[in-house]
Image (cartoon, rainbow, N blue to C red; front, side, top):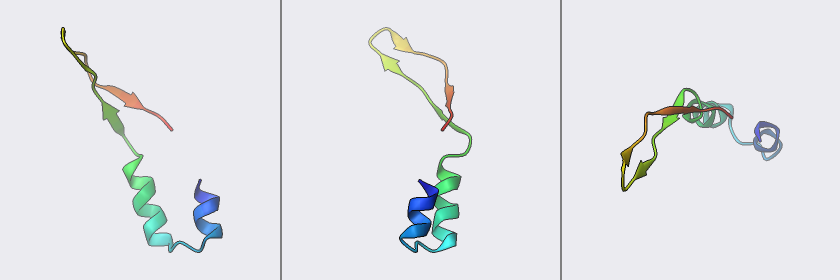
Length: 43
C-alpha cells in the first residue's frame, strides 16, 4: 500500500500519518452475551 501512495505522489507526512493509524491498533467485539477482551490487529 505504501508504494502505491508514493507512486501517486502523496506527501510523505500524510503517508506517515496513515502508518501511525495502523500502529498498536486494538479492537473489541461486542455480542449480546457481552464484550470480549481487546485484541491487537496486526497488518
